[in-house]
Amino acid sequence: MRLFMFSGIVETTGRIFSLKKNQGCLQISVQPEQIFDDVCVGDSVAINGVCLTVTALHENRFDMTIVPETLRITNLNTLIESASVNVARSLKVTDRIGGHCVQGHVDGVGKIIEIKQDGEDAWIVKMSVDKTLSKYMVNKGFITLDGMSITVIAASQNDFTVTLIPYTRQVTIAHQYQVGHIVNIEIDIFAKTIEKLLKGNSDA
Image (cartoon, rainbow, N blue to C red; front, top):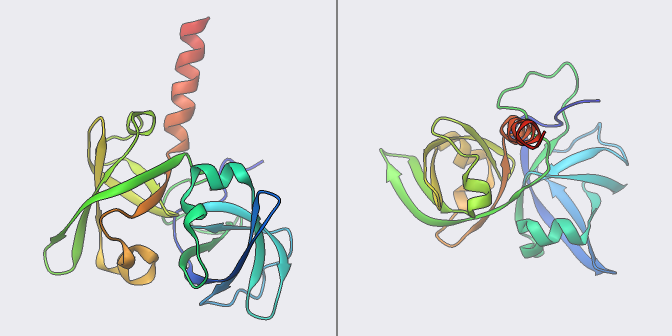
Protein backbone atom coordinates (compact mmCIF):
# COMPACT_ATOMS: atom_id res chain seq x y z
CA MET A 1 0.00 0.00 0.00
CA ARG A 2 1.41 3.37 -1.05
CA LEU A 3 1.52 6.30 1.35
CA PHE A 4 0.94 8.75 -1.49
CA MET A 5 -0.45 8.79 -5.02
CA PHE A 6 0.91 12.03 -6.48
CA SER A 7 3.90 14.36 -6.15
CA GLY A 8 2.34 17.79 -6.61
CA ILE A 9 3.56 18.12 -10.19
CA VAL A 10 0.73 19.11 -12.54
CA GLU A 11 1.07 17.26 -15.85
CA THR A 12 -1.33 19.34 -17.87
CA THR A 13 -4.41 21.49 -17.63
CA GLY A 14 -7.80 20.54 -18.95
CA ARG A 15 -11.27 21.94 -19.36
CA ILE A 16 -14.61 20.77 -18.07
CA PHE A 17 -16.34 19.44 -21.19
CA SER A 18 -19.61 18.79 -19.39
CA LEU A 19 -21.05 18.33 -15.93
CA LYS A 20 -24.28 16.91 -14.56
CA LYS A 21 -25.74 16.56 -11.08
CA ASN A 22 -27.03 13.12 -10.18
CA GLN A 23 -28.41 12.17 -6.75
CA GLY A 24 -26.18 14.60 -4.88
CA CYS A 25 -23.09 13.70 -6.90
CA LEU A 26 -21.54 15.70 -9.71
CA GLN A 27 -20.57 13.83 -12.87
CA ILE A 28 -17.91 15.63 -14.89
CA SER A 29 -16.20 15.01 -18.21
CA VAL A 30 -12.64 16.36 -18.42
CA GLN A 31 -10.84 17.15 -21.68
CA PRO A 32 -7.09 17.41 -20.94
CA GLU A 33 -4.82 19.46 -23.18
CA GLN A 34 -2.35 16.57 -23.18
CA ILE A 35 -3.90 13.28 -24.26
CA PHE A 36 -3.06 10.36 -21.95
CA ASP A 37 -2.95 7.11 -23.94
CA ASP A 38 -2.47 4.97 -20.85
CA VAL A 39 -5.44 6.14 -18.76
CA CYS A 40 -7.95 3.35 -18.10
CA VAL A 41 -11.31 3.08 -16.38
CA GLY A 42 -10.65 2.74 -12.66
CA ASP A 43 -7.45 4.81 -12.71
CA SER A 44 -6.86 7.61 -10.20
CA VAL A 45 -6.41 11.09 -11.67
CA ALA A 46 -6.14 14.30 -9.65
CA ILE A 47 -8.33 17.24 -10.66
CA ASN A 48 -7.27 20.44 -8.87
CA GLY A 49 -5.49 18.19 -6.41
CA VAL A 50 -8.51 15.97 -5.70
CA CYS A 51 -7.99 12.25 -6.33
CA LEU A 52 -10.89 11.03 -8.49
CA THR A 53 -11.59 7.77 -10.30
CA VAL A 54 -12.01 7.54 -14.07
CA THR A 55 -15.44 6.02 -14.74
CA ALA A 56 -15.58 6.18 -18.55
CA LEU A 57 -13.31 6.97 -21.48
CA HIS A 58 -14.00 8.88 -24.69
CA GLU A 59 -11.80 9.80 -27.64
CA ASN A 60 -10.22 12.86 -26.04
CA ARG A 61 -11.73 13.04 -22.55
CA PHE A 62 -12.68 10.99 -19.52
CA ASP A 63 -15.56 10.98 -17.04
CA MET A 64 -15.42 11.11 -13.24
CA THR A 65 -17.91 11.29 -10.37
CA ILE A 66 -17.53 13.69 -7.43
CA VAL A 67 -19.31 12.60 -4.25
CA PRO A 68 -21.13 15.03 -1.91
CA GLU A 69 -18.40 15.05 0.78
CA THR A 70 -15.76 16.04 -1.79
CA LEU A 71 -18.04 18.75 -3.13
CA ARG A 72 -18.52 20.07 0.39
CA ILE A 73 -14.84 20.54 1.28
CA THR A 74 -13.21 21.40 -2.07
CA ASN A 75 -13.52 24.00 -4.81
CA LEU A 76 -14.90 21.41 -7.24
CA ASN A 77 -18.36 22.60 -6.22
CA THR A 78 -17.66 25.81 -8.16
CA LEU A 79 -16.91 24.07 -11.48
CA ILE A 80 -18.76 25.19 -14.59
CA GLU A 81 -18.55 24.05 -18.20
CA SER A 82 -15.32 25.16 -19.93
CA ALA A 83 -13.62 25.85 -16.58
CA SER A 84 -9.88 25.12 -16.52
CA VAL A 85 -8.51 22.55 -14.07
CA ASN A 86 -5.14 21.09 -13.11
CA VAL A 87 -4.72 17.44 -14.12
CA ALA A 88 -2.22 14.80 -12.95
CA ARG A 89 -2.16 11.03 -13.24
CA SER A 90 -1.22 8.94 -10.23
CA LEU A 91 2.46 8.06 -9.95
CA LYS A 92 4.04 4.85 -11.14
CA VAL A 93 6.48 3.13 -8.79
CA THR A 94 9.37 4.11 -11.09
CA ASP A 95 8.43 7.80 -11.40
CA ARG A 96 10.63 10.56 -10.02
CA ILE A 97 9.10 12.64 -7.22
CA GLY A 98 9.59 16.21 -8.34
CA GLY A 99 7.53 17.80 -5.58
CA HIS A 100 6.54 16.11 -2.32
CA CYS A 101 4.29 13.28 -1.12
CA VAL A 102 0.69 14.10 -2.03
CA GLN A 103 -2.35 11.88 -1.44
CA GLY A 104 -5.01 13.75 -3.36
CA HIS A 105 -7.10 14.03 -0.18
CA VAL A 106 -7.91 17.72 0.12
CA ASP A 107 -8.19 18.98 3.71
CA GLY A 108 -10.03 22.21 2.98
CA VAL A 109 -9.80 25.44 1.03
CA GLY A 110 -8.14 28.83 1.30
CA LYS A 111 -9.18 32.19 -0.12
CA ILE A 112 -6.76 34.47 -1.94
CA ILE A 113 -6.69 37.83 -0.17
CA GLU A 114 -3.67 39.45 -1.82
CA ILE A 115 -1.58 39.05 -4.97
CA LYS A 116 1.46 41.17 -5.68
CA GLN A 117 4.26 40.99 -8.19
CA ASP A 118 7.70 39.85 -7.08
CA GLY A 119 10.25 40.95 -9.64
CA GLU A 120 9.25 40.82 -13.29
CA ASP A 121 7.17 37.65 -13.43
CA ALA A 122 6.81 35.92 -10.05
CA TRP A 123 3.78 36.38 -7.82
CA ILE A 124 3.51 36.52 -4.05
CA VAL A 125 0.10 35.15 -3.07
CA LYS A 126 -1.43 35.49 0.39
CA MET A 127 -4.38 33.32 1.43
CA SER A 128 -6.70 33.29 4.40
CA VAL A 129 -7.23 29.87 5.93
CA ASP A 130 -9.03 28.24 8.83
CA LYS A 131 -7.04 27.70 12.02
CA THR A 132 -7.61 23.95 11.70
CA LEU A 133 -5.32 24.06 8.65
CA SER A 134 -2.96 26.91 9.50
CA LYS A 135 -1.57 25.04 12.51
CA TYR A 136 0.18 22.63 10.12
CA MET A 137 1.86 25.34 8.06
CA VAL A 138 5.47 26.28 8.69
CA ASN A 139 7.93 28.54 6.89
CA LYS A 140 9.71 26.64 4.10
CA GLY A 141 7.31 23.73 4.54
CA PHE A 142 5.39 22.00 1.74
CA ILE A 143 1.75 22.58 0.93
CA THR A 144 -0.41 21.45 -1.99
CA LEU A 145 -2.54 24.09 -3.73
CA ASP A 146 -4.94 22.84 -6.41
CA GLY A 147 -2.60 19.87 -6.84
CA MET A 148 0.59 21.97 -7.04
CA SER A 149 3.49 21.36 -4.67
CA ILE A 150 4.33 24.81 -3.29
CA THR A 151 6.65 26.08 -0.55
CA VAL A 152 5.22 28.27 2.21
CA ILE A 153 7.28 31.44 2.72
CA ALA A 154 5.30 32.85 5.66
CA ALA A 155 2.58 31.53 7.94
CA SER A 156 0.43 32.92 10.75
CA GLN A 157 -2.68 31.86 12.63
CA ASN A 158 -5.13 33.02 9.98
CA ASP A 159 -3.20 33.18 6.71
CA PHE A 160 -0.14 32.04 4.80
CA THR A 161 1.93 33.24 1.86
CA VAL A 162 3.53 31.46 -1.10
CA THR A 163 5.51 32.45 -4.17
CA LEU A 164 4.39 31.30 -7.62
CA ILE A 165 7.24 31.19 -10.12
CA PRO A 166 6.59 32.06 -13.78
CA TYR A 167 6.77 28.43 -14.93
CA THR A 168 4.12 27.32 -12.44
CA ARG A 169 1.80 30.10 -13.58
CA GLN A 170 2.45 29.25 -17.22
CA VAL A 171 1.64 25.52 -17.10
CA THR A 172 -1.15 25.44 -14.48
CA ILE A 173 -4.39 27.23 -13.68
CA ALA A 174 -2.45 29.50 -11.31
CA HIS A 175 -2.26 32.18 -14.02
CA GLN A 176 -6.02 32.64 -13.51
CA TYR A 177 -5.75 33.33 -9.78
CA GLN A 178 -7.34 36.54 -8.55
CA VAL A 179 -8.23 37.99 -5.17
CA GLY A 180 -11.26 36.07 -3.90
CA HIS A 181 -10.32 32.85 -5.69
CA ILE A 182 -10.93 29.66 -3.68
CA VAL A 183 -8.02 27.19 -3.71
CA ASN A 184 -7.88 23.54 -2.63
CA ILE A 185 -5.40 22.81 0.16
CA GLU A 186 -3.82 19.51 1.15
CA ILE A 187 -1.62 19.57 4.23
CA ASP A 188 1.65 17.62 4.32
CA ILE A 189 0.71 14.05 5.33
CA PHE A 190 3.76 13.79 7.58
CA ALA A 191 2.64 16.79 9.65
CA LYS A 192 -0.77 15.22 10.20
CA THR A 193 0.74 11.83 11.01
CA ILE A 194 3.15 13.26 13.59
CA GLU A 195 0.30 15.19 15.26
CA LYS A 196 -1.78 12.01 15.45
CA LEU A 197 1.08 10.05 17.00
CA LEU A 198 1.83 12.76 19.57
CA LYS A 199 -1.84 13.06 20.47
CA GLY A 200 -2.02 9.31 20.92
CA ASN A 201 0.95 9.35 23.27
CA SER A 202 -0.52 12.19 25.34
CA ASP A 203 -3.82 10.31 25.70
CA ALA A 204 -2.10 7.13 26.85
